Image (cartoon, rainbow, N blue to C red; front, top):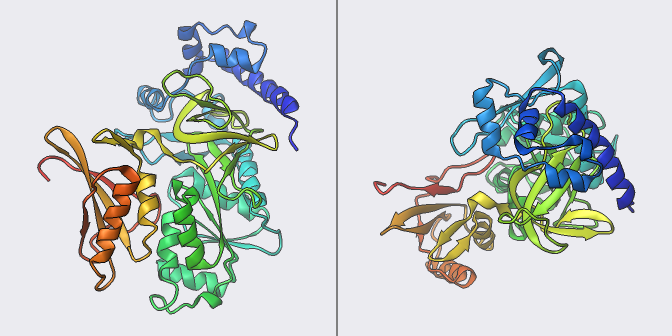
Length: 422
């Protein structure tokens, strides 16, 4: 069991060193400290830090990267010390941000990813992990793979077709699959007649998912586990901060924050104040071990439920949604993850997409679905009824031509905001 008093003391020791170092530079945080009137000399505990240091937002980081191209002014060491490059998938403006790490900061993130594997009870010398990723510039791909390669046979599946990936899993006896929830569904639906590979030929018994909220949506988890006859373990992280949380066998459907590496707050987005145990709020993170490009009180935009269970900080139900993904439809708050939770209750649905547009100055949504072969119209009625009962809204459902909706390997984009001309 964690000693939270000792944990807080260790967090403050790391944090104090980071803050004092940042104050002596001329970078992003030194300027931020001056503008906010932060007095490091009067900062003697974590509570002082939270009271004095303002939040950091993604918009601020983007502005800093644009003002100090190409890497921004967060770096704490000379550029020659940095060896690793990663890039975010883009912001609301479409502008990605580059992130650099030293060997030390990179190793700190690998240590966090190893906690993910420990949480899933993987065994060195026994388990073989298959990575169904494209291995682009996103941090999660590389840290997951490199951390695995320290203890397990790590099999990269980048640049391959779904068929070839399934064949490789059989050929090399992979026991664990690492991918997004969306891609786990897509691969799972190919098992059997679509690929010629029967489930019994696969040794996959655990699937570690990340990149989307789906891993903690009960309906999505259940669908993946049924397709693969395997246990799903969720994980979440961000390129900006690194690997943040992991799932363990004894707390299914929940995420444990790696507090040795992150000072964590869950706040009311409106007031900025910490919420109580059992309440919902926005996840705010301060990096404690990724010191070559630290972030202080970073508003992640992740909507979570805070719980302390056996002295561990737990995100109950995982990351529930993105705050900026919420839309208001005729006065009702609607999250994409909630739509998906309903859709996944109907295994006949092959793929789906939500279209949002303005109708007489009001936002409206419609659900597009793909169905295999001839499915009775009764399914549409059942789905529309379930949507109405869940959201107290009438959400029209339309069946579209098979194969017309996009398929996804990385983060699925199933919410389309349309213009009035479309």
